[in-house]
Length: 177
Image (tube, rainbow, N blue to C red):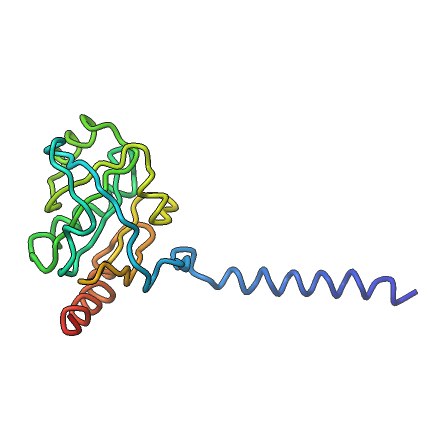
């Protein structure tokens, strides 16, 4: 009779253990299979100059950040002042990937909030975002001189992320380069 209750109780305890462990994890730390792998290739039009295209190969030889953003993204507003301040330091090029957005909306957004990007590229259909494994905007990728993804920030870049993660990783990559 007692054995009937032990099996469900045991299953409940195992599931409760998995739940408790899952609650200790940081949801922003989603492992990316692209870390330490070549960045997916692209060739995209620039937001400000639609007749000009930029390819991944154009960025080779330098450490740079790719920030995926959109005018409709609420969290992008949260991180934007941090990116503006970061860009003023001119540590590495900051390239925007305008994701699934209308060009006039994106241009108006940058006009209103400031443009921290060396250039913004248009990913209107989201295909490049899919290649990069974008879960949602904003996301930021640190890419090294050889075109390898070295870090992925899911969610807004904060001053703490700049100070504690990006700046040390950038310095390390520049030393290695």
